[in-house]
Image 1: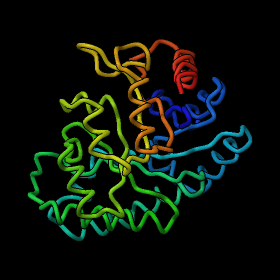
Image 2 (image 1 turned 60 degrees about the vertical axis):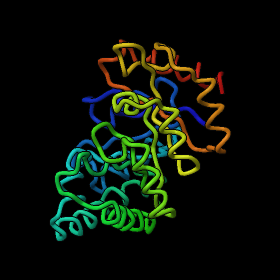
Image 3 (image 1 turned 120 degrees about the vertical axis):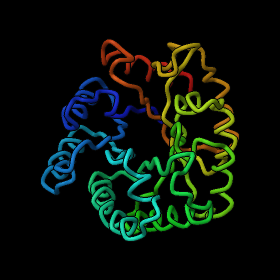
Image 4 (image 1 turned 90 degrees about the vertical axis):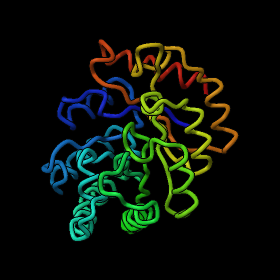
Length: 260
């Protein structure tokens, strides 16, 4: 397991500036959260990749800025929009490919589902999305986002049963807490289909803190990750109003690295 950080930690700093800031503060494992359409253009991506390679940095995952629209774009009852969006997401997959990232994070559909898609139809669509990503060498990971369908351990297990080859996941600790579950419950439901972790901390009344600023038992958590032979990355993902200075991100990362 390697420790990194997401550019989302520095939002609304422009993406390339967020990458540079993380690198300047010692990070070499990064998740990029794209924030606008122009950031998917070839010229932008190639220039960004040149800077990343120059600084011996590795982009391991990307996060589309259309996540909030995915229930409408992918998981509504209008089929044509679904297929058009799958085609559009090739821009994200191609961006990941250019940057060397092997994972794309999907939020998916909301819960309760106002479009009344069956579990089978939902999984069929996710499978189609995942297969498109694999054409670019990119794995599509469903995140356990609060108020979204995969926030539920039961639904995660359903996905693994219906589409075992495509049901792969990102576990975000704060999203588990917001959904009313222990991160350990979500971890158990994902099992060896867990491929990526967004790490943070929490305490009573605060669900999004830097690692070691709350009460979470990381030693036990990483022990459980080892039991399922987890070999993915661990990415710090919090929000800019949850810390004072970017050096705090690196201090948390160093503590996590020592623990591992």
